[in-house]
Each structure stands twice: as C-alpha cells, then as structure tokens.
Amino acid sequence: MQTAIAASKPVPADGIYELKDVDKAPQVRGIQAAPVYPPEMKKKGLSGSAMIEFVVGTDGTVGNIKIKASKPAVLGKACPEAFAKWKYKPAMLNGQPVKCRLQVLIEAKFNDTSIFQDGRNAIFIRPPVR
Image (cartoon, rainbow, N blue to C red; front, side, top):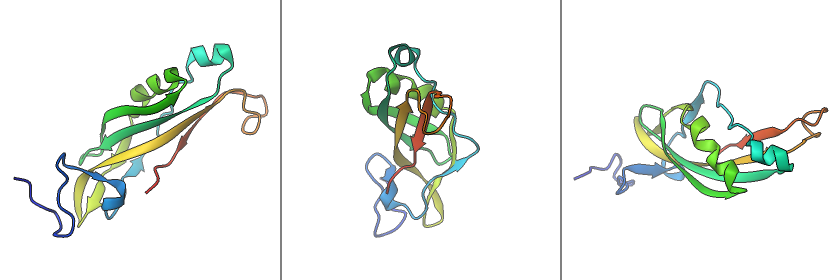
C-alpha cells in the first residue's frame, strides 16, 4: 500500500506525479542535448514538431520516454536517444524528491534564417508547461 506524501495529495496509482501537483518542478542539470536533425527531413527540406513525454525519476534521470505526437514521425523517433541523456534535479513535494511526468515540445526548423543568418537547421526545446 502506497502512503501519501501529503494528506491533500495522495500518491498516484503509478507513483508518478503530474507537474501541476508538485511543489517544485524538476530543474535541468547541465546541458540538454538536442535531438539530431533527421537526415530524411534535411533531404526533403522539412520542418516539424514533436510532443515528447517522459518521467524524471527521484534520482533525476529520464525514463519512460514516449512520443505523444510527431509530424513528421521521423522527428519523434530522433528524440529518445537525446532525452535519455538529460539530467535533472528531481521534482519536490513536501521536501521529498518524487517522480514527475513532463511533456516538452520539440520544434525542428529547416533553413531558419530568423536564428542563423546562414539558414542552418535548428532544433528548439520548449519548456514544459504547468
């Protein structure tokens, strides 16, 4: 039987809290490696986006990486390898580290002159939203 960390916030059945339910969100440690811009997208001149869900463990490691949506699909498939290297300070609830589910939006921009004058391809990692 799982016990609640706080009387007002019972432990979820899967033991993973949502971002809105923690006192302190997971904090990035170090640099988040961006996924590699998929060669198939470069070849076709495609931009795209992917919504990726993952769990930050009590030790700050990333696991349970899932592609929630991706257009084109190849962009989502490029994300898990990079995400598995990410490190966080864990989410906190009542002063205790807890597992927390996050979703981030990855945007891939082909030939992006708004960021790079020479039109290089860019991958953007948008922060999770509460």
